[in-house]
Amino acid sequence: MSREARMLRDENNKLKKQLDDKTNDILTDIVAYIRSANISDIDQENVRRDITQMLIDARGRGETADNVIGGDYKAFCDAIIAEIPKMSTKKRVMTAIRDTLPALGVLIGIWAVFSVIEQIINGATWYVTPVSVTDILGGAAMLILATLIVVYITKNSFNSKPAALVCLILLITAVVLCAALLLPNRIIFSPNIAADAALVIVIFAAHKIIDNKL
Image (cartoon, rainbow, N blue to C red):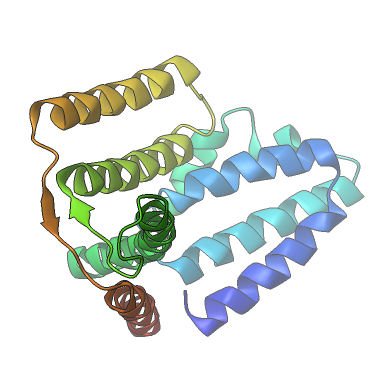
């Protein structure tokens, strides 16, 4: 997210405090849906600011969100989003990578810590962190699952279907478990803990570089 977008986000966070709890709940669903749109961060925050100000003005006149937005919040958002230029395919891919890298870095960091603890418990060399097939599958599954959950929640913020989300989680979990049981849990390689730390640093550096470019 650009510096301008971050500043606008912080301003929007302060602005929404002028709304009552009920209107803020509506705004939260609207913002969540906007996050799923193929528009830039700055455009998302600009739309968020305009809608927030619209709701604040309505409150000052004694009107509700339905009075100014109507009953169909999704249609309201779609109409606004349709007027905003879409991101190019390249920018959309870079945005997806940027948003995934922090989660990947944190996941590797957590795995490295637990790997060291496991090595100490087993009496093995603590600074060597074996990477198995199960580790790779489990990590990939968690990243995919987290991404799908975010996409599902944002795209369905106005008509959430918990049953579908639960089925999605169970399906991915079942696939991972089957793969873990069928594939041999062999060690692929055993990097030094210093290499793990360096990888985490590189991942967050790459995130910063991509974020600045966007």
